Image (cartoon, rainbow, N blue to C red; front, side):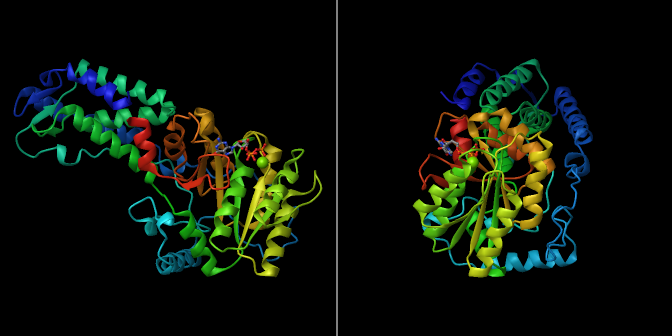
Length: 423
Ligand SMILES: Nc1nc2c(ncn2[C@@H]2O[C@H](COP(=O)(O)OP(=O)(O)OP(=O)(O)O)[C@@H](O)[C@H]2O)c(=O)[nH]1
Ligand SMILES: [Mg+2]
């Protein structure tokens, strides 16, 4: 039985009079006032964008500054020229070929949300609850504050937590839901449990769709500008970076792109061979060094080699690291600085639940990423991590790993995830 089935079953026992007041009654007026106060309090408690997304904190020494071409700070806010470039890129996305059936975007209008090299890191996604056509201007019943409503919301909160959604995201959703519901005039044709279900579903969907960009279209758009397009994968140990590197290479070569892999995990024993074997199987080049070599040098060699040969895409596989290990994070930032990747993808393990969220937040703080690939969704992972990553970092999940084969990488589908959590 899914979340909503359990929820509605409990709701069935509820008399609507316990939760709503008749219009024009004293209780209804009080509820409207209370709803206003709750919304104001919620607004005041929200962090400002600056508080929400601190600038990356690590300052690293300029030991690799022999590269003349790289002068821009990758973490700087876009300036006018960049904005113009972004607009040009957006226009070239419009021109990109019509997607094939398998390339079809999963959101209504991916053109608006395609991002890339100039992407501005955004703060956490703000939860907004829209009661849609459930509210009515006249007639209806007004939702009031009551123990019963509190108990129902508590149960909903527990259900969301058990789907692996992080506490902070769940609290944000529930508080906003409560503030939105109280004082709202609900049409008598709608049952309150249906109102709550619709509101919650649309809220969670919006959370996952915020800032979504279509992977294939974004790569195509960048390729119109310049090549090679550089994609860097980051994340903690064992989340699926190397496998996802191979899956992306497979996807792009099937689209006729020439791909080069950069074995920038020079840290873990066997990592270079692991990637080289994938490269051989996929028939793509792999740029590598000895174990312990300079990861940034490998990555830069791969980009320069691809540029010299006119190849389309470089995918940089990096070493897994704990998000709190400063020296390893510095190495990643160095790879980033010398290669100026068009896309940084944070690879998360759906099975890691709340840990994946903590890691995502820390990576976003240290080395901003453009989107996440959520791997191992074919396992019994509950999926709530996706909601929390999106909520906490403001960056969308764009790709989903659904198995260990090369073809097991799909565009992330927010509606599918919401259904699997709620149904
Ligand atoms: N079931 C399943 N397994 C996956 C998926 N993605 C990766 N894996 C498995 O997860 C394990 C770790 O994957 P890697 O790609 O080596 O992970 P990594 O992030 O490169 O690991 P490190 O290099 O050690 O940091 C491997 O056994 C993969 O086959 C997925 O989508 N589904
Ligand atoms: Mg790896």
